[in-house]
Amino acid sequence: MNPPLLDVLGTQWDMTAPVVSISWSHDGRTAACAMGDGRVAFADVRWPQGPRLEARQGGGASLVPADAPAVAPTVVTAHAGSCHALASDGDGSFVTGGDDGRVMRVRPGAEPEELARMQGLWIDAVACGRSGDVVYAGGKRVARLRHGGTDEIELPASATAIAFCPDGRTLGVAHSGGVTLWHEAALPRRLAWPGYHRAIAWSPDGRYVVTGMQENALHGWRVQDGGDMEMAGYPGQPLSLAFTPDGTQLATSGALRPVCWDFARPGASQAPRECGIQSKAPVTSVACHPRYPVIAAGYHSGAVTLCQPGSDSFLLLKGAGGGAPSALAWSPDGERLAFGTQDGWLGWIELPDPVFSHHRSAAARPTSEKERST
Image: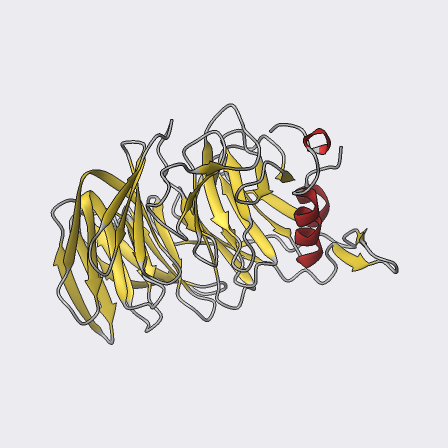
């Protein structure tokens, strides 16, 4: 049995506080990690003496072990209590929200800067748009900070998750009773559906917005005309959602294996496809590779795997233990995966292209050759 790739191509640290969220700088050099004690850790992933794969003459690749350990993350304290949200703001800086009502800009080696404050509210969600907008939500209030001014809307219920459409201009806000869409140059638009919507994701082309619900279901809308679809049958809450880069598959948590829904023809089939390895407890996190149809899946056991839509094969990235993965995030170029756990472990794994070549080959192997259960 081969060891998990973390053991040979990655590194990890015990940050001693639950990991809430992970976000990458736009240049892919820094993985920032928001934690439950108000701190933010910055991992510089440049590792010149780290492990690497070298092509062999005649095919295949050889692993060259690390010559020196990676540099440990640096840490700043951004909030007096808990950090609840994190987003990359470009150029190596990040925006955070916390239970002290403050919205902070943080960067490695600098003192945190307060951008805004909602007195008496928890800032549960933040997002950054391509035009420089910073959006934050506390209770029913959602504010958009741009060009020195602030616009604000009030929702019918507290915001639970926010995300910009890929065009960077329309914000989607999930809340009890549906989703509110807020374009930068238009009044808010409500997409209603009964239930408690706790997670949100946009398709890469911006045509669909989907929520994960407390009622163990997904709900999706076609943005152009508001046509909607319900996707149910989960044993747990699907609170982690990610589209493949071509937008044809939506991968979700909430079941014993990653569940994929067909968005090449959404609504044509009500049967989702499970993939990867089945565990004894639901998948907690999923993240789709930015270039390939490959899904990183975190299990409640602490294990992290790679799998593909429609395939039972998987590649073990991290073994069980260390707490359930609470955050998974690919670097912008897809060559590294960062992870964080509820027990406070933060790490990242080098995943150069030869790893995906191996995985594509593994997908075609017969069942008897597949790796062990998580």
